[in-house]
Length: 236
Image (tube, rainbow, N blue to C red; front, side, top):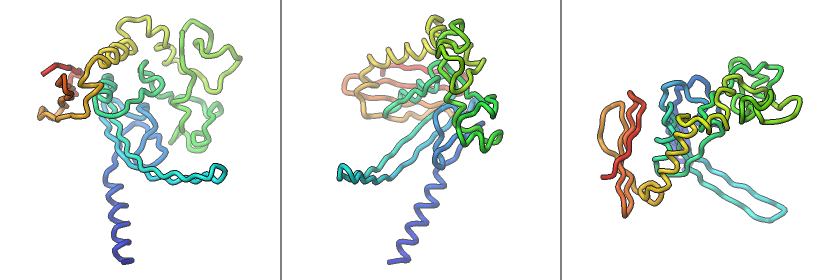
């Protein structure tokens, strides 16, 4: 029995390690194989992530016990990655700044960092401050782009982020913010996106992804081209 249990343990251990791989410019991770948000994906890199978790918690004051088994997945890529991710079955989370195409802030001086990981391991690992800088709202609003009226903020604002301030991008018709906003409004009207729990993969080229989202009232073909960085959606 002991030999059998040991064998199962090592099988699960090495199976887990073989399932995860990352190719990114910066990896920000809380656990092996899992990155904190899309800011960690390198340019023109397609990243698939999947994982599972087990949890058990006890609360002595409330006298209750909770057990959990969690499965999650993420897909990230380039300019239209939100369209690909949002078109898949499952819950979608747009990380703060993704709708503005804000990049990871990699030039925070060490003396201004707040994250203990960044302070300890910079410049090899910059910690989590790279995605926690103040949200930029309006470039011309004050030195903090409308985020605060204080003399200083928890973290400095990136000059690159000022070029994509939220209210400024909302007022620009062809901004990434408005592209994502338009797509989400369109998606909300598609039964195959909102009600379907069926997805069928369609064979296509080596640099393309194509699948059908199918509901009782609609079949929607989703096509993503990795060479042209374009996406299209047609009813079958």
